[in-house]
Length: 549
Image 1 (cartoon, rainbow, N blue to C red):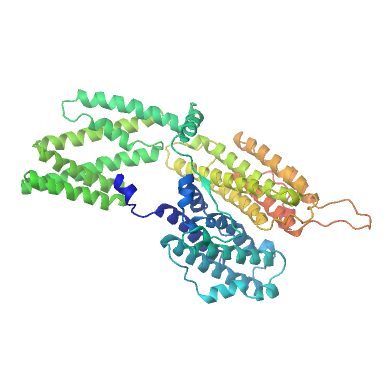
Image 2: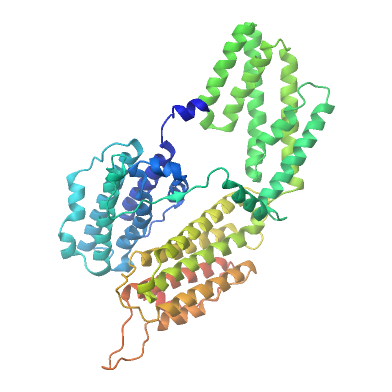
């Protein structure tokens, strides 16, 4: 540990890789949008980069400049890319405008890839003049109009910022003057104490999977110790050690690791036994074989748990052989106690489980609420541009990402659980996930066109935001109670969102076309969500005419 601190293997390597992966994911997203204007995007790279960006005050003073600010720009790039590609925002699916948008997206992908390579390796950005020329050409003002032109201008400005940061030389002088450092503070060791205590209090309830896992591990470790000691074999601690090593909060991982550990132990014992019987190694040769097995374990660690167990088991056999233990006795102990530990782990989950399948509706409801708050927060900025708070929008977006990842993890876990679905089938879950992803994407497209502080308020936007907030909260309650959500308040708000009182000159204010299109997309996603949950095929469908128009 001291050597790693004094001589780091790769200083800031984890932060560089996380940020580079986020930029590369944005580049891939830009290229996919050329073929699918509504292509999905996995926010996990952006969330990983956000976690890696948390630093202590001491680290913040020494952080390379190319790691300051680029993550925030990458997060703002995604809605701009989605808005530029979406046909609902003014660019037809075919024609000259679409071809030019595809050129812009391809150039953006190349620029982001170049920035990702520069950040990852700490080297200058290597970029072709052609890609930069496409983004800065005056043809944008001729070919594109309206929202598409605004999105193209914002894309060029954001890419300029990314390149300026990626070209940093490692000092504050390399940071563009109009950008502020994007610093997320990580508490020091002492300041982590209240954070840990808060996390413990948050999980102290019967339904917590973490608490149930902690209880299982504690009970199995004690039982495994007594079982191992009661058996007429040596090394009785192998049983509880095996159980603790294979146990995970999820059933599928516990089962898979138990099988992999037992299978790897059998193969490892077989190989080591064959070598011992063939070579009859002395202490020195056994030591050499142990070192070789340890090296193979680290070399092959990422190939799977079973392969690493083969190496570990052979390592233990050779190591115990150095001490003069009888290899045949070691083989028996290793196999039997590993089997006992794996069985204890699986039995504990059967007796005291923590299934995700019954909680799927709660996870889905939480994602719906997060999406609804994000959409309402974005629309609220159109209602009151002068007092808009972009941090509030960003916090809502982060909450949406966290809820989406929590749902996806729960769904992936539930698919491998030996439990029948309770209230939502796999097909309905998949369709509902797609609908909520589209709901979040529609709100994100609206975010890409947020008005400036000097812009006029959009009539009816406040009512639409309130309708979205209330309807999604009630819809989440309906999902938990296994009822179909009703979006009538949103339907009414979309139908009348731009109705305003005539002015003195007899004219009636017209609502922003971007908000009208975005509101239609939001309503369409909500209706799709209801249809997904109606497994009878006869959903109570609210009018979708507005969304299609």
